[in-house]
Image (tube, rainbow, N blue to C red; front, side, top):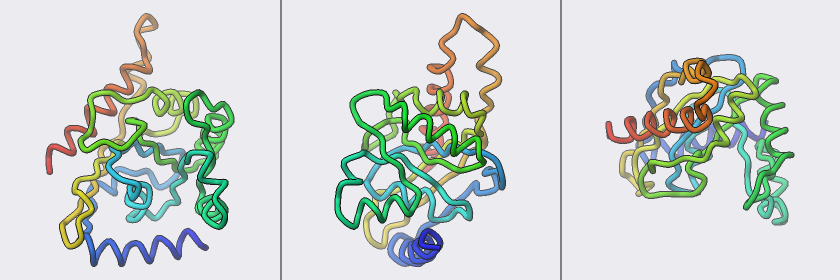
Length: 192
């Protein structure tokens, strides 16, 4: 209920202040596990990715945020779960895989940190979680700079077929999938 109310409010705010447009919504499966892999420009990106979707999007958030009174419980109710930064968080990976195998939607920013432009490199976590959970990977591009009354766009690309990367056992499959995700995001950002 809280998630739906927040999403409705954000839809109105984004329409007014950012003239927000979305394309490619038809690429997101109506059911089943989905990982939305997006470029990362701002702390506003998580609500931006989920605002136009009718499915609830879950995120990992740094563990320190859950210690903040009121804010920690609020983001937990919205579907966020903690991840320890600076290393591999087995609990966060397990939570992600369970969520996706249960048919949930998860937003991930493969760059790992905010960048002014989509970078060449991404972290392999999204690819690893997708392969373990068998979730569909949807590349996402946020285009704009969150300036009031300037147009913002979000593009949801066609699913990335990871089965094409699993045929060569000698290759670094996670690296190849990650490169494919980042390449698709950069292409969509470049479309403007």
